[in-house]
Length: 600
Image (tube, rainbow, N blue to C red; front, side, top):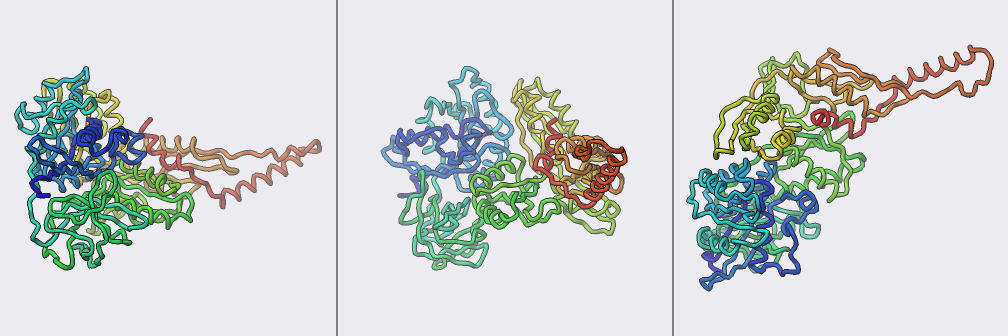
């Protein structure tokens, strides 16, 4: 089929604006799936996605559409996530498309991620088709939302398509607009093949399978795959397209979206953003890749059973194929043994990765308190990066600690502006300006320390705005801060997993609160356990877990009091000896005590 009859597009929107439902209707109207095979969120294949009602992974799928002009068109749709933590998935989808459907909820209007995704699409030079969804809702504000979209992307009101994905209104008009407005891919059949890897997965029988968008040339089975990121070559045994499952094809031509099977057993040889070509007709230059995402939140992942360490390593490697924004490196903790220090795009991303590891690979994991990366200027003139408090050098060696700041954009109804500004100020935010999208909707711009917002900021933002405010943020720069390392000592030994880096003004209150919280969570031992918070060598707070007391005099049925005193003294000496050599087991709840503090 000619590339003139191919349309590659994605759906972008804020979370919960109806992307997955719209994708369901497009599949139904184009008869990609039979009616009896249809179900809600059909492209959300993971149990986690269905349980939470959110899209976590982008999902490519091919549809055939019979247009009124008598021609059949191939639509390659890539459904994308909407949460800020999965913006990397969106950027990868955009790089493989020529057009984007910008979906906006008619009741909620333009929100923070709507703005962010629209700018991403503009940066990729995509044709944007604005769509207002859920027009059947009683609370729909179509005219107001139309004004917001016009203000955002500068289109004309009549260019905006009104739909109800749930009821099927406006779907035919939308399909017609995709044919008319989204440009076909360029036809480059006669050049050296170049395909951009935008995603990948792992199959136990076929190895790592890259998902590609072919930009130039033709890729056929029997050719030898060559990658620009490394020198290894592989024999291509199968190529194909995505319907609901992988469907084998004779070839992948310029403009196609599909997959390549080449029995790649080393998962590190398939890198999203890399260019795939063939040895027989090798391209001289790679395709321009998309921006590499930098993790914002770091946490340690440890197997509950130390024997599962190798299984955890293999699980992380396979998961990285499916989620290129995940980074990890080996780490050792005195409290928990061998594990991995992992980097995530946000707290939800961290939570999803942990759940996927436990469900898909049957692992039981222990996670440490999340934290961000700091840049340190040392007194000897050198610099270093620290992504865990355990790596922090002694305070006497540190000149300044620079913490990451983000540029935050909060879209909210105007009645919640005061409460949100108060929340941002409590998190050491720097106010920049306020823009009014409409008479009733404002856009607040703040600069906030990333370390202050990774725990509970999003929850509190939703709480004070009754769910109406939305947040988007991008990493801006590093700035000097009055920061200190807060250590927690159990029975005199520092527990690296419980250490944190806090602002000097909050260190004392945080130390007191953490000691009190840990007193509730650490189980009682046969000996007294001291819980202390310290900054450097100075103890700022202490609480004590009382020892379990065994009644050693229960067997005494008379006699002199000295007999009981002997037993008590013997017990006391035994407890003193246990205190020196005894080991305190730290439950997972105690390791996440810092998170619990922020929720209180």
